[in-house]
Picture 1 (spheres, rainbow, N blue to C red):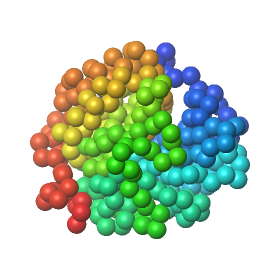
Picture 2: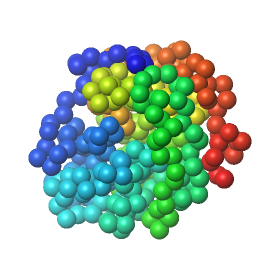
Picture 3: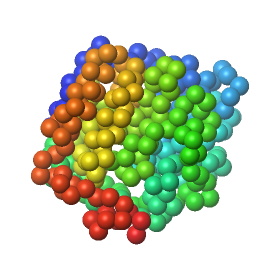
Picture 4: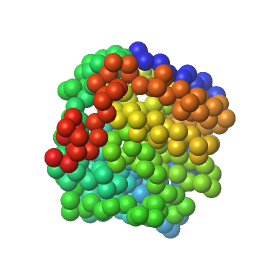
Length: 293
């Protein structure tokens, strides 16, 4: 088991369980855990503005997402689907949902090959340290999805379509085109997998969701140089609330302190020693990376 920086129950953000199956964090922000991964719903169900879905869970998540959306927003389709990245546990239902709702899918340009059926992600790293999830990681899907009819590139000015007041931030390392979402007004960070708030290397941790400040999942992170820069970037934002791709939302000063600790000591805490990509990062176009082939 790979424990990183422990958090306590007092660091967890207060949430309210909704009848629609989501956990409500704010009037316009809710999430639901689909097996081991979080899907985020942005939009006020009582407001006039359309809503946005952030990430789409596993390939088995589509019906649950549609059910939550129907109960939460009625017949309203989302304005968009925004992808933090296209790993199998975040993009598993994007084809199904985009075609069902006929809505645009927004992503970073460096994530396009994995959303247009063009490129495989680099191989997983079973030597990345930890438990069963790490050892099993070579069996996890890394093939691309194909949402070309709906795919759009995020605006260059870093605005997020359908999400006024938010901006997207390029946080690569876990994947080339990984992004996080940031709202300055209340210092809310939707981090994707740039940082997570529970371990993913151990099956026990992934299921129980023990709170901790954790770098990106080790077995699926091929570029630790970029991942380190991304953690430093999100730490510099001084987030008050963090909603990550895995784990429970966290808030407050202690979570920020742990995030700064992670950023300062990233190679000692987060990077697997002797792992496949420890000293040999896989970058787009490099011979040890399937990207853009």
